[in-house]
Length: 299
Image (tube, rainbow, N blue to C red; front, side, top):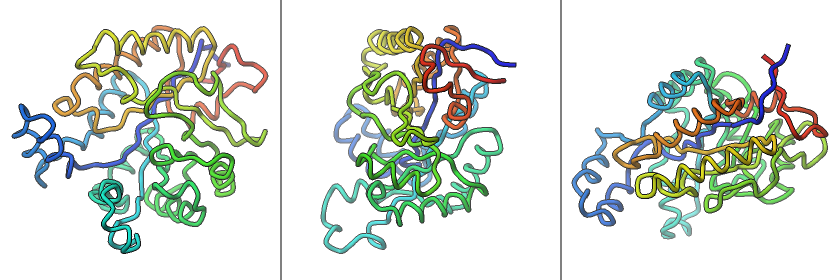
């Protein structure tokens, strides 16, 4: 038995950071009217970027699940060359990060997995061209979650085509979700999935990252009109649409409006008869490549 849906909306979260560190002083300088808040929330006993429970409660209420991509980034002083220590960009990339083996991180990964959320790998910044490093990160995450992970998205959407996808397929990933942009939204790589090798390995293009959309706090009507337009196009084309909301954007004090926009996006998609869920389920339920109009998903 199967149901017919007009289109698919895939929900994803890239876990880049779980703590507010250098961002506190930075935002204190750029938002002087909120200086005290940003400085307070950068302290070790405050953690507005830890939003896993918020996301789980929201998605549970809406009856959906999503994919969380966890990062095992290199540590600047232990794993990067001394020559890279003085480059400012490397401090933002490799300091204040987390280790998936840390007890608190490992615990939330297992809770998410047990609750039906998908755990995927967020490949570290240089791993898109380093198969050995990516294999190591995959092993580390799989030991934490207790089973193989099926999908990967590269940090900063780094991608070398087809080299990165060749690495992913060789390491046993079934799909990649790195094809997209942090600056532009839309179906810029078509309305379906990409099959770069004409086999079971699939690429899910990213339709929209939250930062590419109009700011829902400053421009709420524009933000919603953009999301509704994307949903309308997805329904018209029978598309596989995917969105990325970083967990920290569910902090209402730090990023007002983004959690509400995410909820509204899901609710409207459900009203439009969309299938909504994580990438691994979309992968399992995809229609044959020669049937682009309607997404058929099994119960």
